[in-house]
Length: 188
Image (cartoon, rainbow, N blue to C red):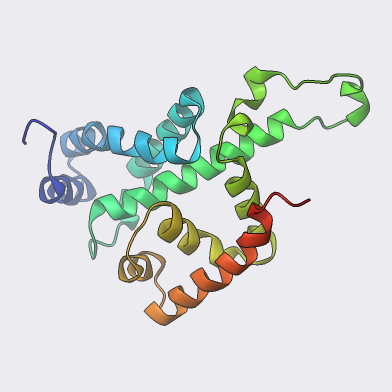
C-alpha cells in the first residue's frame, strides 16, 4: 500500500481474495474503496448526506454481490457501476419520499421541506430526471450513457461491463444522447 491507499492491482487482489471467502480481505477492500465509492456517489448526488447514504448502499451491495465481479476487468470499474446504480437508487427513493402521495395534503405549501428534498436541489437534477425519463422506455441506454458521459469510461470498458458488443454500446450511447438532449435543454 502507498500513502494514497492501495493501487488498482492491490485492490484487484483484495477483491479476488474476498471473492474466495477471505473475510479480512473483504473488510480491507471495503475500507480501501470507500473514498472512491463516495466520490462516485457525490458525482450523482451533490448533497453529502445523500451521497453517504448511496455510498453505504453501494458498499453493502459490494459485500453481498462480490461474486458477480467477473474478474475480466478492473474491480474498480465494476465498483463504479455498483456505485452509480446505488446513487440512482438512492435518488429515486429520496425523490419518491419528497413527492406527496396526496396532492391535497400539501396544498398551500409553497416550498418543499429541504430535509426531504435535498437530493433534488442539486445541480444533477436535470440529468437524473432525464435518465429516469429515458429509462422508462429505453432502459438499455441509461447505464452506457452514464458510464460514458458522466464518468468518462472508454467504450471498450463499458462494453465489457454491460456484456454487449462494442458497436452495440456505441449505438446505445448515441441513441441515449439523442433522447437526453431535449430533456436537458430546460424546455418544458
